[in-house]
Amino acid sequence: MGLIESIRLAFTSLAANKMRSLLTMLGIIIGISSVITITTIGNSIQQTLKNTFAQINMNMFYCYLSSRPYEENDEMTEDEYYDSMYLSEADYITNDMINELLEKYPGKYKVIYSDNFGSGESVNYRNEYVKTALIGSTDGAVEQSKLKILSGRNLTQRDNNEKKNTILVSDIFVRQYFNENENPVGKTVTFAVNGEETYDFTIVGVYEYSETKLTKFPAGTKEIDKVTQAFIPVNTAQKLKGETDSVYEYVGLLWSSDMSIEEAEANIKSFFDEKYEQNKYWSIYIENETQILSMIDKVIGIVTIAVSVIAAISLIVGGVGVMNIMLVSITERTKEIGIRKALGAQNKSIRLQFVVEAIIICLIGGIIGILTGILNGVLIGNIATYFINSMSAEDPEMMEMVVISISPSLKAILVSVFFSMLTGVFFGYYPANKAAKMNPIDALRYD
Image 1 (cartoon, helix red, strand yellow):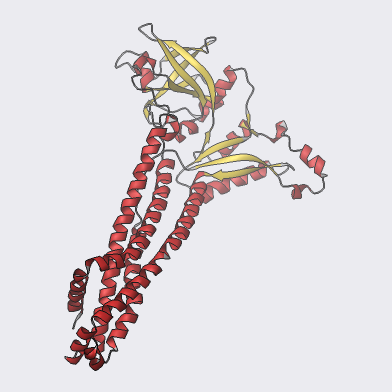
Image 2: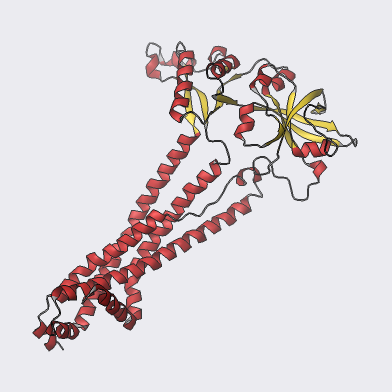
């Protein structure tokens, strides 16, 4: 008897005992569905994180001032060391340092920094008041937000260094302030800041306002009442506020995608190591968003695998159930086995028949488990989406950035199918082998 005939007989036997076959599959179904549900959730969390972080530029470093370990200053007493923890003016990152870094690696890095300047108010051609949130910013901060420039240009490092009164406005502000079809680039706008001083700014660019990336307006807000952000050079903002050149405890840097992350980090580390070589108490610690995401991915992956292995233990219980039912089935079909052997069936044919039956039981259970697991994952994902949407009313700026993705793991599905078949072979071989070794005379005598 060949494989095809064994498969046909296996389905005939399962159809004759539907309820028993279903209960036999139950352990396999529970084990496989648990694994698929867990891996779907883990995979979906990883994909959701990637999609969410993709809303922001990930090719950036944060450079923080970090105190050196006490062991590096062993010539000092502990009290002297802790007294030195207070930052002096010479310890901070300065504009000169940043400019030197940018000049050393031209076009390779952009600075990410912003500072609130105040609420600006201007009067449009219809004598209506237009309110705007003025933000001191760098070109890197605007680029990091992934805002689309519709016309003109972004702010530049030169605008910052020369403290120019340039401004990047939104397309909504353009519609609020200018006549239709009027080109705003190059025009000067006067803002009263915080209801006090007035300042003139020249528009250098217009960006497309995105509620997902910036602030979501309440439903029904009129066009004229929408307050959007306008960006001016951060050094200009500090100059207009009467502040001296800023120093920083940390600075963000975007790096050019034509460099590898290793090269980009090595350049920054080498530069700041040189700058802080003589500083006994402080150095620069560099953190990368991609590394953070990679670390989160690894942690989620390890937890998913660990929990999946625990869930997969139920497959052993399911396998024992398959073995038990196969032994019962063989006992019930002893005479059938005896007749087949008396008619010349070989041991390997009998063995193949029952192994195939066990495999099909496990395979059908595995497929049902996979479908159940995927359904569970999708259901949990939809519940999570519902709660996130309900939370977005409380924190729209944060929650609009979350991009839910339900992503079943193809690898886990293929592995589950393989292990379903392997379970059938492993737990079906002993009963099949027992059937194959039956003495035909004893089998025919069995009552």
